[in-house]
Image (cartoon, rainbow, N blue to C red; front, side, top):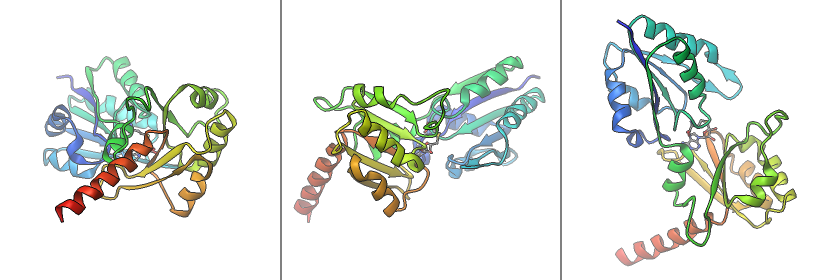
Length: 254
Ligand code: SAH
């Protein structure tokens, strides 16, 4: 009997932020190929006999090349297994999920894609930053920092600086200096608030806030490392307001 592939979003880090549908696929799977950013607690829901294969890539180190991951998805499904490809956040947001869907579809294997909460949405909510806010931000864009020096597919910092209210950068911490420079060059105010969120939604979550003109120095001083997101825009100030109200509330309770 032919198997199938489910390309599944595991959510941003907190294991409880996975969808019911995704959890069900994990419980039913014969084989699970999972990434580095997937919370390993979720693998505890797999059948004891399920085969768990780590395909994680840490920056600069590819443990299983992408092509090999795709071959494995096809191979296990052709052997008749229910295969889950478990990816951090949402599989179609900087996750190469569609490359895998194409490979599986080309092999004639039935597949489905189950969305997950992407880290920008999860982390922003977790640290009290609304990506849009009436009167403050009517648009947001998510961007990768990893293509800063990609001339074939450049990130349009000029357009982003001028036309988008909130910018969220994935994979951007090591490029923070370049990002700051580009946004300032294209007219973004030097005092635009910026937040960096490391390990968003997890017990190791860390947030720092500053302004665009010095955020790279602050990130270096605070040793912010991956996985982390950069959130740029006036909405970051809403967090400060929420935090100060929280303090007032706590003071009243005491
Ligand atoms: N498909 C994923 C993104 C994969 S790219 C998603 O939808 O979220 C990997 C990048 O995502 C990391 O370099 C980091 O910028 C971001 N990221 C993923 N999980 C994160 C988390 N818990 N906190 C902060 N950033 C995260």
